[in-house]
Length: 181
Image 1 (cartoon, rainbow, N blue to C red):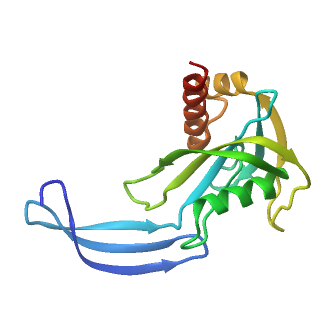
Image 2: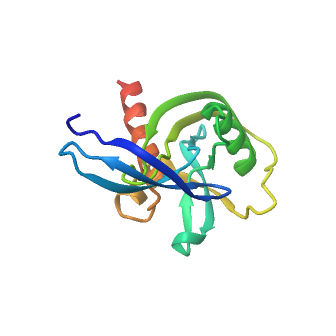
């Protein structure tokens, strides 16, 4: 049982629209018990939409928990049990109005593994076609294009602070460099 914790009990504390909060009693490897608070989240997906002119299509939107407007790549929450690729295509279309001919899977990330089960899947979308946005009724955002190299610079100098956006852009940079070799 080295580096593992065994769940003894799990009590649902809060059942929300986006998350479920549990308080678990766990057995540690030294035989002691402790509690863990765990947020269960259905996961999410994000997409780097890259134009033929090497621009990334971003959305800017107000994020209530941070009380700030953030520059992010299109992204969304999965429904419980939903396929992440299907969700990614839907979110790209809803938020930017774009569809893509090609999607490259960039892997996944665990944004806050200390207390949250959320997994975010990342994609690069190319061969974009533009049509109309289809935003949710409670969704307000602006769409803007930023040259890819400038976007990487913005990640590195702290102008883009959203973790999923940072990682997906840096993975895209690595993938594009590998393709050019």
